Length: 192
Image (cartoon, rainbow, N blue to C red):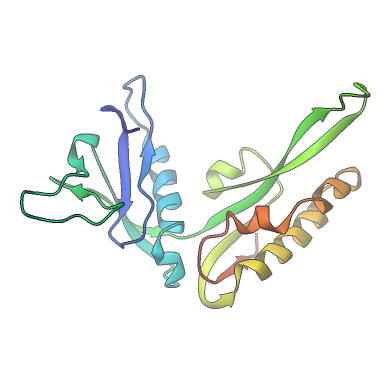
């Protein structure tokens, strides 16, 4: 999965996703891309569940990542070892954008009829706002709302933002589709 030209990101906090910036053309990876990936890693790390508002993220080259422990040592399943120098992005703000986009789907029986299938997306605001105007910002909050309550509130906010002709498509959106993209732990919705 990890190619030699990619960049691997992780958090110092255990329970973080190993995130890979793919680089098949071996070009210099823009700092904006690294920063966006850092926000993603931080938001989906244990830092969110702990209620931290900021965290440190590091990135390394693929050759620094190994699933093989040193001789005589044990590595738990799903773990890996990082060797060498880590490059840190410090004080990454944990603010996640969750929004919806609409995929146009033609009706098989009536090709003139078009359906708009809502799809939930998440990521750093800088990335999400390029794809849609229908999004909200979340941040971790130790004593905030559960993902189920946040999902209900997000759906209602999405309904207020869409044109009337799209409201019926937002209404069919499953709360589970929204919950899947909300990081583990309590959250609060920020005013945009």
